[in-house]
Image 1: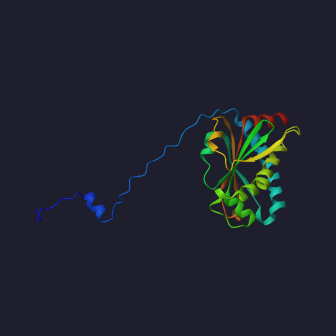
Image 2 (image 1 turned 135 degrees about the vertical axis):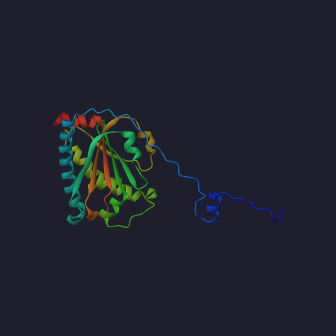
Image 3 (image 1 turned 90 degrees about the vertical axis):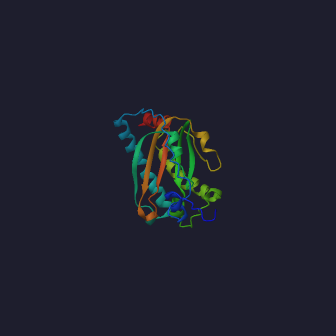
Length: 213
């Protein structure tokens, strides 16, 4: 019995030699596809892009006044298209802060990266920012607020504006499956990050802006 030979398969030999990881293979997670109702024509999307350019001009000037010229030199709209709000919330990571902006009954959702906070404020980035209410409040009071004001300028004065942090709220409760338009912007390299910030504009908000223009 002591001299009996034990036959090993090539896979078993490789594992013993450390050539193959014994860990279970990674499961690929299939991306969910949500229904998108394209309610704007290509021409209307182009017109909305021009409106958003004006919003970001105001946003950029506000940031310059607050944080200084060297910090803010360029903002670029990298994409603007119809999107299901569920897709928007799927794009949220642990590095993001989310805000809900109400323009009367119309809404927008703003996604800001924590690296943006560090770059603008010059403060060390807290990688455990999910417990850092301070960062969330600073971004809400200045960055998100400036952006919301930019969109508010495209509306009539009757709209009441409110910005709420979704810092401690369950993001899944905002998944209504509705289509809006998602606008992504990219920052210049001076901010030490090429992270993309996003704004999800509800159909109601877009209609309100188009009614004024």
